[in-house]
Length: 443
Image 1 (spheres, one colour):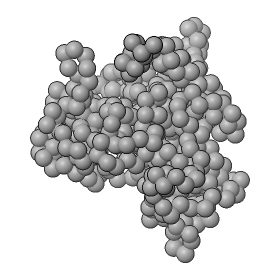
Image 2 (cartoon, rainbow, N blue to C red):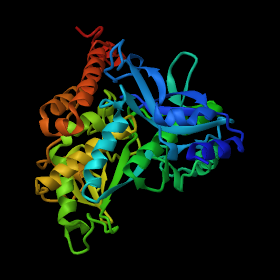
Image 3 (tube, rainbow, N blue to C red):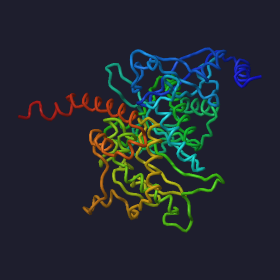
Image 4 (cartoon, rainbow, N blue to C red):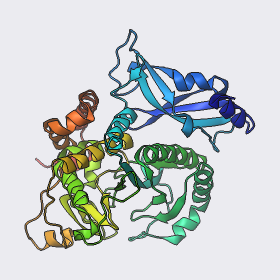
């Protein structure tokens, strides 16, 4: 029996009749369609077809052999969806004209991973999803779904967990059924904000798993009358949602290449070089890891209603120092720049390529930080260089970082920059309530 028929037989025995073929557009939003399970071989070898120009960021024409986007599913990702009876989920990569599509972010990550596979290395990634539970009022205003979630310092609030236990329990049960190894669930530092942690994986599987996490969270939240939000900062006076990457690399024998007990910060020379690459390319990485206008509300030096902010504003790294952009912890690196609105494939690819550039160029990381950078700022001392203050500056940095662009791929970067420039222009044309309140009658 072929692998295709084995999977068909296995899934049909579980009542599955259709496959949700899921890919993501350049913004990192899940897209796809339902197709019959019995044609599984076609979906793997040829792919499910989509009109290419109807998908954000493909760069495909309106006619001709390369106008069709084919999403070829990864057979190993096929599994029943608990919240869609009769349907199995499968992750897909984009192809056009029979070739991998260079504007497909999953293909971009796969190409980046191939660079370290050629060295016999594996990138391991632990992703920390933070998110908000919101509700939209009848007047269109967005608000925290739990109206009683009002503490000034709500981190680890058990009363909120009790009130939202039905949502959290369904998330736990559903994610467990999907193969997630859950580690913890907690209330985060803003009203309506939660974090659900699960075990790390290799880079591609980690990205695929995060997309499945979001797909699940959207569905479960809707069943409970709420909206799952990966917006970076929906509340003006509260912390935003990060998507921190915990990064480590092992060689073919499984040796951790970043870790060295006797090294500064517990890192090997390679670990320091990787961190140096992240810091050297940080401005350009901001465009990919913090890709929305709203992302820079999170990346701001501001006071939090809870009295605490971990926003990684300055290009620095240190030992278990959450005020730095790069945090060294237990022989691995925590990359704190990405937020929950990023395209996880593109952000991981860019992060990996920047770190590898640090290794290949033998970059020396700056002196590590041994203080609270927010306390240092308050004391009026000189500060490390800041990240870009808005999306426009980040896009300019990406445009100027020719090394990173070349490694990510010019086709992807061109599409990404085009759409993000349009987003910035659209934002610039808006007149906010703050502006009206400040200026309408002032002059």
